[in-house]
Image 1 (cartoon, rainbow, N blue to C red):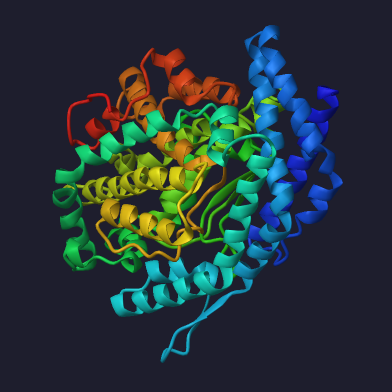
Image 2 (image 1 turned 30 degrees about the vertical axis):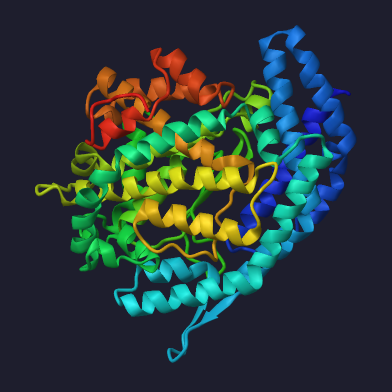
Length: 505
């Protein structure tokens, strides 16, 4: 196989798919026309190409660490593409159906686009209406989307077996290098360590934000809780872009000179409710899309996706395709979390927004919501291990397993209907979890070297740019080892939340 030619075509495919993804999920175009893109580049992802790349990966160890690393990344890319090719018709139908769904609320007369439902919930003060929106959203998910999600899951399982792995989990562990059992033990220990502290930390924030006790919290209330409307005075929308630009300037980055970065913060009905970054070509064309919700959420979303953008925009263009576009996504997620964590930083709030959190309300809300997210994702991991096991439980048991794990983690009654919509391909849950741990270590490293206001030090920016230039050549564990010599552990998260001393978990 001519690997040089393969890389060139792979980069062309990535750019075309990124263009299409951006146009659809930014709400610029209703169609999600990915099938022609996959058809034009079908040879990249054929079973024959996968087999040849697998042979290359097996043989690459003899050619050195760099060759082995790049060969494994290309195999991972080919497998993801092969699965995408197998599911492309269903994925396109799913995206178009979701974009066209409209929720009608009984007795309300309102028509809410499906993708705007969580945004409407976040800005809805009436808990009964939030619950009505949730019920309509869940009904639409079950009726219109779950059959497509189920078809994609079955095709994924069957394809992994057809390619020679006993399960999709086994495939991901081998080509992505995940040790999912070890990660599951660490995150289970984290969940256990936060059991007693959860209600004292989260309960007062729920009561202060929503006026309801923790035991009466509903899943429909979470967007409103995260929205934190009481904090709007601190998070003035007029300061959204200026605070982001000032943060970059403090690190020695001039956004006005970044011709490779494109920012979209406009509101559109079909725009995805989730902010996202699309690296069409790294580092030449990186796009940032944020759906305005209001208040703190907008700042978190912009900074998070901005972290992705700055990472990709600073990657060394001389690096191979693999290191610029592929690799361990826990790396880019860690940089994203590093930026969005600034919204919790009292020093950043004072410097960039002129906000004094005298009574600790903003900090308490940030800690509580972060703990909810951490426990939720820690609960998703064992569920996804069941979903992608060699002998998975039947559909009904998976629904119950999902609802039980998530309900316990967040202390709310979690709906069964989202048990398939909540799955991300490639065990991305493992990237998020490891990224949270890596970010905590990285932030502490910056604070120790450059002080509490590290975000205003150009030297800190130089440190980050040096890391960004390397793309995703390393794994999260390797990056941390090279930077500090430490091992990735979740005890750092416990300490960062103020729940314990930093003991490994």
